[in-house]
Image: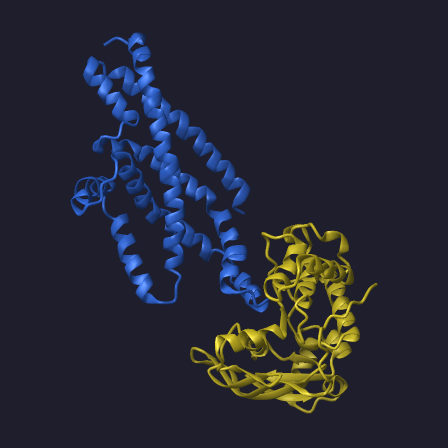
Length: 216
Length: 258
């Protein structure tokens, strides 16, 4: 087996397309998981168990079934119910939803870590409940959990190749297509492996730096 | 030192402001308050003393609606606090301010914002007005230069003085002080107590004070209530309680702390 720089050069245009798509999935998937996770976490704090119970069951179900199964379900079953999204949209929503069931746990821990004295001070000042959440509790809770959310972004990055299975041409999809067309596997797979490291490693360093700065 | 008017509607002195009737509070099988009756006249400074676990702090927490009594009624300025609809509870709460042992400032806000947040959102004060008043109050507690600091950059004593300013910014009729110097290093206690003495001397605010600082209690109090096992076992003017207590438990307690 010899290393062929020509194959690398041939693969590069496709690689950039795949990288762009991977980053797009990662950015939008993260946003969905951040927003939806916060919604789940807040719904789990409502006093009525008719809200908490269904949210708890659904999120527990999603967290404990494989992302790949959910992806196939969204891609193959939902269209039968009349919901036809592109493969990319389906993939982004599935991965965002899946990870939101993890970020909700992160938010929950962050909210519980805000000292009871903060709630009491807000009550003593007669702040409305909504205002207490938005200006007192959540700013403190979210600041604490930014590094933990960052870790899930890195985990999500490493899960993005799963979207290849529903025809989304992110990095691994492009690499596999190139390999099958040219019978050269080493070069494209190595290139995307290096690309994952180049994104994930600095990101993990950033998370560690944030941990030092934000979590005391 | 400027001494701004800290209370918007100075209550008529001498009328009854707070009344506890037959109030019982339990935590599990532990009865913290036992069919407690007492009342406080407006404008008075009342100090609650007694061994820890005797229910003093619980009284302040009930008044601040941070806890609910198991039995009995609490009224503030004629409005019943328990049981009452949420709207009425919010109205009663407006009359009461509280300063906590652990300060409980909001660490994500500047000192100034800590003080202006509630006046703007709850009282509907304009931002400019709230800030002007916050600066006056900070001046009163000797921290005029700390407007833009974060609470975490201040010493415990400074944080507690900001917390006092924050409570006063809501123009309460009643100020609840829950062991406000207990968490402070000894050299920081005097600064906080001086501020409170000043407020006691220059305003009409009714004060309910749980403290272990007996000299302070003697100085500012009109009335001292001695608690033991969830009941008031002796009450009276500070001279009487501190110099000539009638109850044995009071005597024992005072000889242990003085």
